[in-house]
Image (cartoon, rainbow, N blue to C red; front, side, top):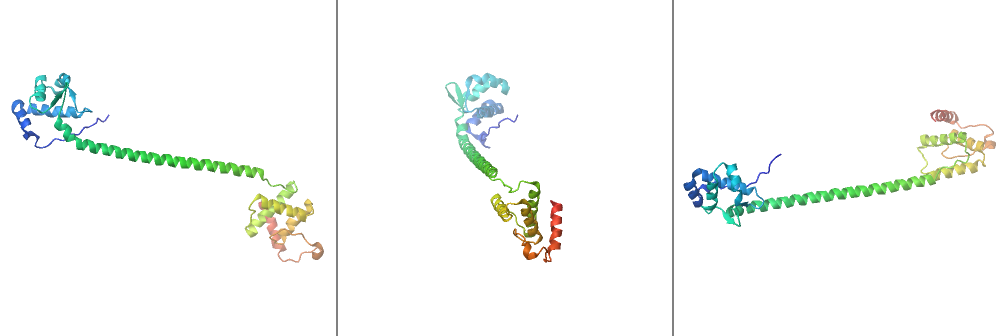
Amino acid sequence: MKKDVYYFPHYSNARNDTKIMKLRRVLGLEGYAIYFMLLETLREQGDFKLPVNIITELEFEYRVSKEKILSVINDFELFTLDNDVFYSVQQVAYLQPYLEKTERARLAAKTRWDRAKAMQMQSKSIANEYTIKESKRNKRNKVNKEKVKITLPFNTEKFNHKWNLWKQYKKEQFNFTYKSIISEQATMMQLCNLADGLETEAIEIIMYSIAQGYKGLYKEDKKRNNGTHQDQTVTAVSNLIAKLDKDS
């Protein structure tokens, strides 16, 4: 695991401080090293303080005598003793700007995180709300579709086939499709009335209207046509009917 690294300022002219110069004169570079090792150890503490009774452990860690450590703490006015703990007033003062900056950065990061989390939750809420609405809409449409079903006037496979043929013809010739079940049902009822309620007549009307290339359903006037068809498009439309029958 990566260990935490705690920063504290170390000024380049620290060796020239009068108190440290006295330390160096009495204990030499070893005393100077002990002083900065004590600062490092203090920096690792949450309150920048250490109990005096920890000196035994520091003796083992630093590989120096307990007497020298106590001398650095007590004899050069570099540390403050308070209720069996010691700390460096100067170190705490030097660290304040850094600690404040770190705290501001922490709070700013927390604010960004909270804002991002709130936006994420809001997005999820909107997505869930949309999903619920869409689900309700689909359910409602499904119910509506189940309620409105096409009713064939003649419930036979033959009529159903011819009616599908009529719809295919309308789509291919005029690019027309019934917009709703209601409109298709209305046309089917109109066909039924036109055929006087007879299935064979209804089928004849469908095939006649396709053969004549009509957009709508029309009943053949057999008296006027006298049993013949003069329309020049009959052959072409007959071919179309054959094609539609084959495709269907």
